[in-house]
Amino acid sequence: MSDPCLLAASLLTAGPITVPPPIKLPPNLLDNLSALFASSTTQTLQAVAAQKVVPIVEVNSPEFSQSRPSPAILRTSATSQPVTAEAATTLVSNQQAVSTPQSMITPTSGSQLYLQRVAALKAGKLYTRLPSNSFESLWAKGTSTGTPLQQPTHEQWKLLLEQEAKAVAKGQGSNRLAILVGDSLSMWFPSQSLPYGQLWLNQGISGENSGQILKRLSAFAKTRPNTIYVMAGTNDLRQGASDRVILDNIRQIVRRLRSNHPQAQVVVQSILPTRLSAIPNQRIYNLNQQIAAIAQQEGTGFLNLYSLFADEQGQLQQDLTTDGIHLSHRGYQVWQEALNYADSVMVANRNGGIAQGLGTSD
Image (cartoon, rainbow, N blue to C red; front, side, top):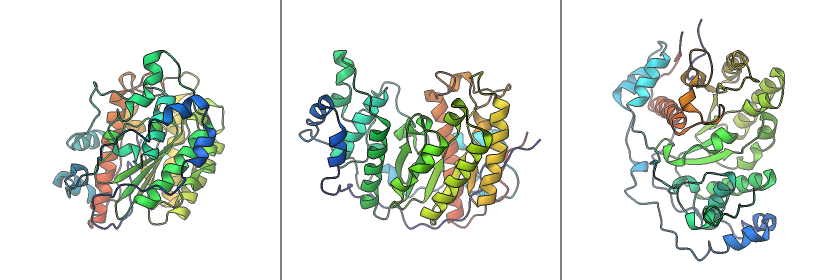
């Protein structure tokens, strides 16, 4: 039995990678956000304006080096022979991985992450370009005092992501941009683990299903991404949606993204396995087969993460998850390696390589 291709990436063109300028926020960008904050949150955020923010964009930043994929990746990218999951794992393990140190303080709740991102936006910074403990004095305050932070609403999250996208659209310059679109799995992707050489915009919101994701794609329509990574369907399964609904929404998401961003490579990522008895993993496997077919029909890439995360029983490997559905630190490392591999294939394509027939087999 053969799995769908690991990645079918079309040719891309891109200019030289340059150091990004500090993102300039348009006047009154946060007015709408401020109107939604509770008074306690507003008081907490008032300290942001007075806090000194150390610039992180440097001329010699290693993130924007002119490094190229290793010869092994380039050769593999140019072949028409299938690449096994084991080979792909070996290849990506050779890439430089940038992981958040275990000792690094980082937000652990949605409210903390939300406060951190609002603080970064208010300071004119992109949070994916900042250390994971940035603005700790603000978002960690509730934890240290024992006072719980207010949980942001779904509407607040949508508005925040829209404002981040507007800021990136104005401050991208000539830099490459990649976007993560999805639910909590994407939202919690560690920023320091994202592949080098480009800006990253995280458009994931916890708890969203494919229909909700589809409805908010216009939020970042004015950005100019080179690559858009999409993952949707897990929450649909938890909420009892049918396969047809999931697949129809994913097809519409792909079509909308291709229409809004014709210059971008859209990469649909497979639904990850779980350890939840209520969601049969054979159903997820079958859905991924159909998602891969949709990707092929719509002319987009398909990244088969399922085979990297599933154990022999088709369940999410225990060391890759915290609760049977969300990912552990090691789980995000595996995803990071897959993104590094996918990004190297697309870089090779832009440099004139051909990536046809890349696949996994079992």
